[in-house]
Image (cartoon, rainbow over all chains, first blue to last red; front, side, top):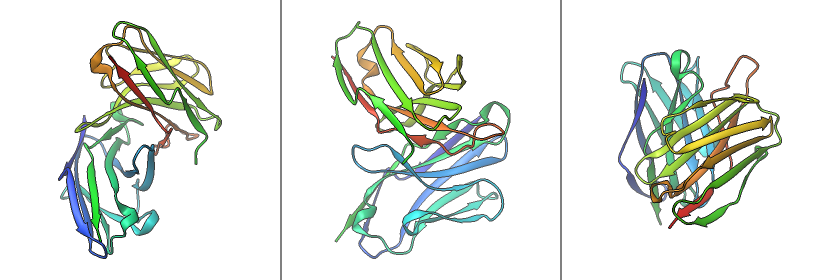
Length: 116
Length: 115
C-alpha cells in the first residue's frame, strides 16, 4: 500500500520569496516520486521525478526536490517565486514493485498563490 | 506535449443516463489510465490498461467500466450516471520497454456534470 500527504492545501508567498511545498509518503516498496503542476483548466504537467540515484532532483521552471528516505519526504522548493508559478501542485508516488507497480497515488494537492 | 486528446471536453448529462468518455493517443504507448479529480482528493485511479483488451480496476472503479480495442483508444463508460460522478476526468499514458515508465503524461481533461 502507498499513500501521499501534502502538508497545507494552500500556500501563499510573495514574488521573489522561497517556495516550499511539503510532501510525505508511505510505501511498502522502494518508491518512485513525482511532482506535477496543474494550471487552471489544464491537465497535469510533470515537474520532476525521483526514481533512483541522486536524491536531489532538478526539474523544469527552476524547481527542485530532495528525496529523504529517513524522513519519508520529497519536498518541492524554488528559491525565488514568480507570478507564473501560481498553480496547483501534486505530489505522487509509484511503487517500484508489488501491487503498486506502475500505479500513481496522488496527494490532495497544494494551491500556490504568489503575491506581487 | 504528449499526443493525448480527450472527448468530449465538457458534458452535462442527467442522472441515470449512460456516458462514454474517450481518450485517444498518438504515441503508441502501451499503458493508459483513467483518473477522476475532485477537490481535496487529488487524482484517484479509476481503471487502467496495460495493453489491448487488458484492463484492471483502480481505487475507485465502482460504477465505471472501460474498454480498449485499439492501442490508441481507451474508453471510460458510466453505465448509469449519478451525481457523485460529477468530476473532472483525466486520461494518462506511460510507456517503457520493461513495463510502466512510472511517469505518466496527462490529457487535457473532461469536465462532466451529472444533474
